[in-house]
Image 1 (cartoon, rainbow, N blue to C red):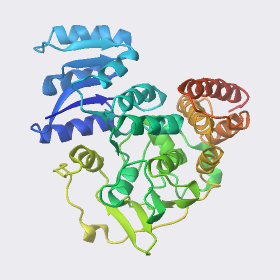
Image 2 (image 1 turned 180 degrees about the horizontal axis):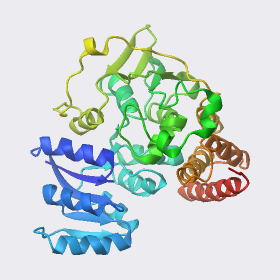
Image 3 (image 1 turned 135 degrees about the vertical axis):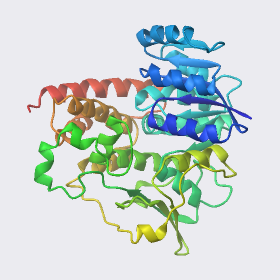
Length: 394
């Protein structure tokens, strides 16, 4: 049995991961679960999976969780608190695989720590690559860690790569990646109406059940921009060799175009348990609990180019990865601040891209060879984004 640590157990990826684990109790033992605030769901997960360690990052919630554990029938769980404890459980000797599913920059340090000690990384956190791509990939190479992408698109690309492929290496026969996107809820909304979009409208994704921040990223297509940056690093491809394709049915999760003219596509129902089960079983396969795809029910599939006028965040992501250095970290930090401000109804939906672009213009693409440089750029970009928000008016 493999020991599993889930960073972000109460989020949608964490919940889906535990669903897959429950189907294969002979393959995985849950060693550690982590959460920030949702201690009610965390308690339910502990009752079912009985981890050895639990991290509740929020100290106030951790006190409440300890009281709930004491009042329950569970015993023998060591409860830790604070962000540093995430690195502790991600590097435990008895942990073989780490599901990195914490959303945002908070997931960077524990994921990087796991990579440095050679764990198998099931990567659902975008920021580990977007913020510190070269540093993270070097840590994977140096330690001999296995890196398995969980995002449905990157997992699809990985599945379409040649046999024996390792993330981070170059597949010389692959000339182009076709990175699919649903287009989000505003794919057909008149551009002039986007400035009146509400947070409730933006988080109503037509295909995927995701958290509020990721749902907004899908609506702006910043999620695809971040995935573009990830794909460049995961598959050692230039940004010019990655084409974003809007595919509203979300049945083809991505494609790889080969030099002989073949295009390989990975298809399946839109359910995150498919990529999770693939990565957990790799290099084998096992049941994910997802219903088989009925292609007759699908009927037909549509493809279109994304409009950069409608989705300026996608353009900014291309600019950030081409500039390199600290710019992807600046892009990510500015986006996090802008999305939070939008969700709090302090700026318009269309202001998200404005804040990001103005923040990026305030920085030069200096090198990002150390983690300290990345974290400094992240903090400075957040401060700059806050300043740009103050300069806007609703």
